Length: 547
Image 1 (spheres, one colour):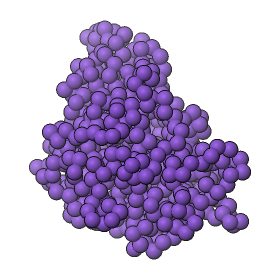
Image 2 (cartoon, rainbow, N blue to C red; image 1 turned 90 degrees about the horizontal axis):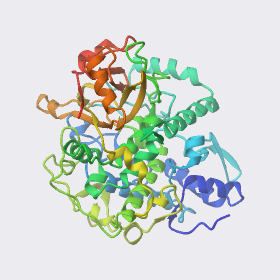
Image 3 (cartoon, rainbow, N blue to C red; image 1 turned 120 degrees about the vertical axis):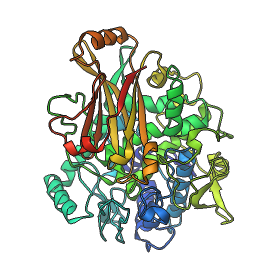
Image 4 (tube, one colour; image 1 turned 180 degrees about the vertical axis):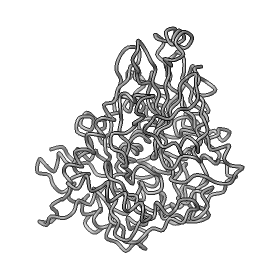
């Protein structure tokens, strides 16, 4: 057994191994702490209901009813994404430590790039149905959360679809958690009845997670794991601004197609959608049946910004995101500090990234921007990014061993970073209107080479069920994505485009909760036969270009 160092965040799998080897206290105390904060009065600021609700629902401020505003506090698509979530984890950790007997508890991370996760899926401490604590078998505090209060979705045009009744229990793939209307309740009951056995659906969840983590495509003729590659690629982002968020990444990559970068927020989105309801396919079979999912109707809480943080797994996922942030800092000599480019589009709110609750749409985001609603320990003011640069000196924690440790030095191999910046041509997808898509979605691209479709990768978009706002805002609700074309088949792709227009060289699919939109490189947006025609009517044609 290894010595568990104080003030250190370990992998949850490491705590499980300690437990299995006889050192039961670290995992038992973690379970005790989580059980404790979930049982606190929901009005207690330390309660899981209160803390989980900071991210999204229950909404507050103008976003309570107006979809042009965001009713949660979380920062997505802005330069504050890593730092806001870092302080969020810190506050959750302090709440865990407030439970009697749990003063030394630290928040572990789910090591999503480990071989264990790739082979087995989610660590079983996060999925086991029960846990034995103090001689009593209890529901595992880490697998779900039962709401102690109802949540009323009042956002205009939401149709109350994301309302949650008292005693609602959060769900993961392959289940659905849509219970806000009588129609949704009936559809969800019918869907979930197919997966009534807990062990069977946990197996399906782990198969899906493993499938995503093992999904590979070719870079320079060699297979690469997509999610692992993206996590590695983001470590080479040259500065904090570009590392931090997808808005900055998208603007940079559009202006620098030969020198693209990867932002941390992109691989982060994958894991939300994998746990929350999207599966992965190797061949979308375009133009045939149009079927884009193996389990239609899966809609777990982790898959939408509105409800993600009400599932305990959110915090173990984000602890890995913070660990990756820490690795980037060490690798890029930014452990002592970094800066924000206030001229970057990611440093400004927009209709794509609206201000959070209590935010100001005209704010310019900087190292001194308040990370609401989190107050310093002395209560004097809100945390800022400048207050959480140094995790040990300022926040009092460090990280134990993790799968990305080898990339902490600049002499570590970086060939996997080719996913972000490999030379060659780019498939550019643009003009996808988020206001016309209900919920999160995935953009996926394929190239037809030697008569076969080969994946160019995915771009997940963690979104909201309703993001439509005023008419003047709609033109700013656009999503774009870039995918590398391998250098080798570029000439062949040109030949296919000119000599075989009926066999398009590039195919793009936008997979949504309500069906899929397809696009051929030289033609209009097309729907497969199995998709909902109303989706095509609502979503204007998006563009696909090779640049």
